[in-house]
Image (cartoon, rainbow, N blue to C red; front, side, top):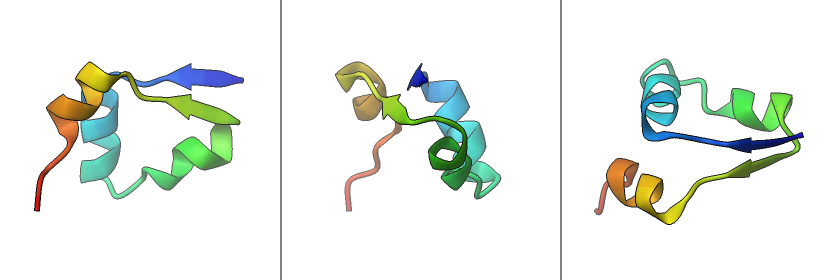
Length: 43
């Protein structure tokens, strides 16, 4: 199954230290470029 992640879900999982659940539950996780720019922290 492919998951297309949005920013709020990624942020919530990150706060809970649960991003690894995405790998466990889904075969492929797609993060659109705009979502990546919204959630990525430089440095």
